[in-house]
Amino acid sequence: MKKICYIITLISIISLFFVGCSSDDTAATATTAAADTTTTNTRSNTPAKSSVSTPSSMSASGSASSRTATKAGDADDYSSSAVLYPMIKAVVGMMKSTVSMADLNLMLVDSRIAAGYGASSTCYEPADYTISFTQAMYNSLVAMEEDFGGTEGAEDSMSANMKALIGTDMDGPVAYKFDNITSGGYTQEVFTGETCDTLNESFRWNTAKTKLASQFNDTMGDETYKGTFTYNGDDNVSTFSVETSGTVSMKLSLKMATCTGMTGDCAVFSFSQSYDMGASGTGLMKADGKADDTGGYATALLSMKTQGMNMKMGYKEYWEGDGAVTANSVCQSNCDSASATWTTTGTTNETYAQDSYDSDGANGATVSVSGVTADGSYMLVITGEDPTTNPEATLGMGEIRSGTTDWEFWGPDKTIVLDVYLMNSDGTFTIQSGATVTVS
Image (cartoon, rainbow, N blue to C red; front, side, top):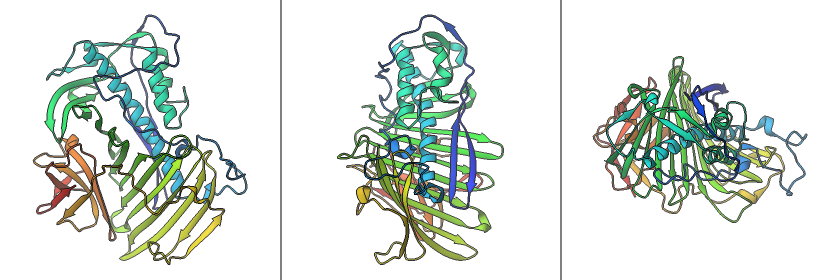
C-alpha cells in the first residue's frame, strides 16, 4: 500500500524543503508483459490530465542554454547562496510525488468504471477487487514523473515501485468509493484510503472532466500534513499547496499557468511560503516568475514579524536549465518600490523578466475578502460545509502576513457562496463570522 510521507528540514526561518517518498506492498498475480514502452494510458471516465507540463528548469533537469557559459557546479554558479530556487525545486519534487500517486489512483478508478463499476454509495476494500496493470498505465506514470524532472525507475519513485507489476492482475492498492455529487461546481467524486474506514484522499471533477481538485493528508510523528492540488484544463493552470500543523505551522504553494513563445515547456508561476512560530514570529514569502526548459527567473518579497518588529526583504534569482544560478539580487528595504536598492551578484539574464506575472490563466478568478484583517492562514470553504469533516469542500486559500495579503480560488464555479475559516496552528479551523467573499 502506498503512503505519502514528507521529510522536513527548516533552513533558516524562511526555507522549507519537502521530499516525497512512497512504498508499495501490493500483491500481484503475473500474466503477460507488454513490449510497447511508448503508448500511454488514456483515461475517459476520470479527468485525462492531472497537471500542466512543468518546465524542466524548475527541477534542474534541463540543459544549460546557449545564453551563458555557466554550468551547474562552476565557480560562477551561485546556487549555494540561492534562497528562492531551492524552494521552487523542492516543491516541484513534492508535487511530482503527489501527482504521480494521484495519477495511479485515477487510472485504477477509470479502469474500474470502464469495467461497469459506476457511481454508487459502495466502498470497495482492497481485497474486493483486482486491477490489470498494463504497460500503458506504467508508461503514463513514467511520463508524469519525467514531466516533473524525474527519471524512470528512480529510487522510491512510483515507476520503480510499479514496474514489476506490468502485465499482472494485482490486488486493489487502495480502498475507494466513487459517487455522483453536486457541490461547488463538481459533479463526481472519488475517495481513497488504506481501508474504507480511513478514506483520506479525495478527487473531485466537473462534468466535462476538465477541472480536477484533490485533497490529501498524512501524519509523521506529532506533525500533520494537509494538501491540495488542482488542475484546470480549460485555462491550463495547476496549483499545489501543503500546510503542516504541530510544533510549527507552515504552508507553501505553487501555481503554474502555461505560456508560449519560449523553449520547450513554459510556465508563468507564483510561489508562496508562510510560517507561524508563535512568539518567535511569523512570515510570508511571495514570489512570481517565469521559466522554460532552459532557464528561469523569480522575484520575491519576504514579510516578517518578529519581536514586535515588521521587516521586509526582497530577492531576485536567475537560473539555467541544469540548475546553475547565474545571478541573485537582495534588497533590504522598500523592496516593492521602483527606487529600491538591489545588491546583485553574478550576471543577470532578463529573458524571463516581465512587468507582471499572471499565473491564474486567461480566465483566472479575482478574489475579494472583507471582514478579515488579522495575520494568519485562511481557507475558503463552501458555505455550510465543515473543513474538518469535509476538507474536499475547500475551494481556495488566503494569507495575511505583516500587511501582505494574498487570496486564491480554484473552484470551477465562481458563483458559489463561500465561508472563511482561520487555519489554527493546532490543525483546527475557526469560521470568521461576518466575513464576505466575492469571486469574479
